[in-house]
Image 1: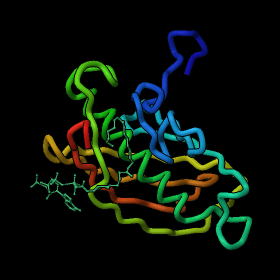
Image 2 (image 1 turned 90 degrees about the vertical axis):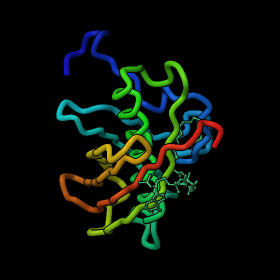
Image 3 (image 1 turned 135 degrees about the horizontal axis):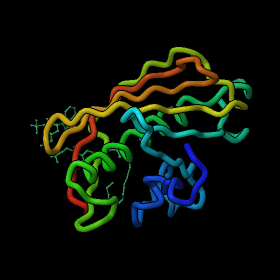
Image 4 (image 1 turned 30 degrees about the vertical axis):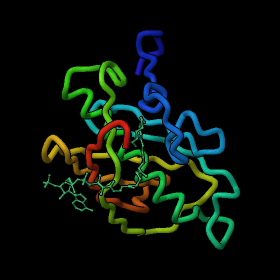
Length: 159
Ligand SMILES: CCCCCCCC/C=C\CCCCCCCC(=O)SCCNC(=O)CCNC(=O)[C@H](O)C(C)(C)COP(=O)(O)OP(=O)(O)OC[C@H]1O[C@@H](n2cnc3c(N)ncnc32)[C@H](O)[C@@H]1OP(=O)(O)O
C-alpha cells in the first residue's frame, strides 16, 4: 500500500457509532478495541497484539476466550461492513446496520504465543439478507492456530 493520505483507511470500528462491545467497541475504554480493514483480495483483516494479562494458564499462551472474542468481533464487524458495501453505502451512512452472532464454531488448532501479534482473516459469504456466513482464521507467525465458522444474523439497530 502507498503512503499518501488518500491511502489511509479508517477501521470499520472507527466508523461504527455507539459501540460499547468489549472486543470491538471504539467506545469501550477497557475493551480490546480491535481494528478491521478490507484487504485487496476481498477478505477482511485485523491485527492484534495481546497484553500479558490476556494469557491462558501458562503465561506464554493467549487465552482461548480472548481468541474467541477476536474471531467473533472481527467476523461480525466484517459482516456489517459487507452489508453497507452491498447496499452501496459508507459505514454508518444512513440507517444503521447491526449484526449479532447467531452461532460460532471454533477449532483451536495450535497454542498462540502471547508475545507475537496475531492476524485474523475473514472470508464472507452473504447467505440471505439476514444471514452472513463468515469463516475466520487466526494466524500467529504464518501458522494457522484457530478457525471459526460464524453465522452473523442481522438485527434491528435497537437490539
Ligand atoms: C450489536 C447490535 C446493537 C446495535 C449497536 C449499534 C451500533 C453498533 C455497531 C456495531 C455492533 C457490533 C457488535 C459486535 C458484537 C460482537 C458479537 C457479539 O458478541 S453479539 C452477542 C452475542 N450474540 C447474541 O447475544 C445473539 C442472541 N440471539 C439473538 O438475539 C437471536 O437469537 C438472533 C438475533 C440471533 C436470531 O433471532 P431472531 O428471532 O431475530 O431471528 P430468527 O428468525 O430466529 O433467525 C434469523 C435467521 O438466522 C437463523 N439463525 C438464528 N440463530 C441461529 C443459530 N444459532 N444457528 C443457525 N441459524 C440461526 C435462523 O434460522 C433464521 O434463518 P432463516 O432466515 O429462516 O433462513
